[in-house]
Image 1 (cartoon, helix red, strand yellow):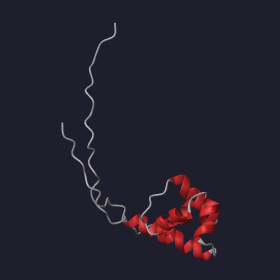
Image 2 (cartoon, rainbow, N blue to C red):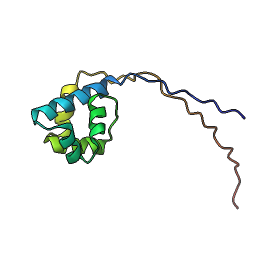
Image 3 (cartoon, rainbow, N blue to C red):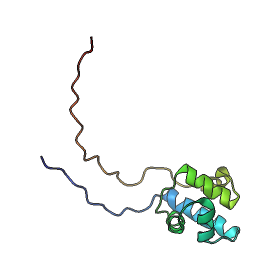
Image 4 (tube, one colour):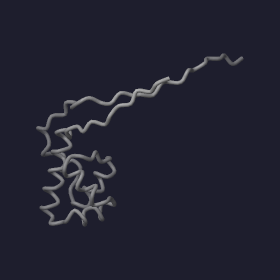
Length: 109
């Protein structure tokens, strides 16, 4: 049985990720915090803040909430300026290469 492997192809970040990262960076500059300070206050690594700001990372809602708390802004205020950003899917998703297991059905009596 051969397993088809997919090479990891670098993809462009989604427009929403880039816009969100830029918004976080803008707000961080407004409150005069370094990436390191923001990372410490949001309980993440500094390199992760950098990845978010570049649109490369896809932070969880909990991480975004921590970032908002550290930047003294609500989630709504963080996302509000992003209203014109396209939410259309970008690129292809990788296919699931796993073979589903055989399920044997039995009746219980």
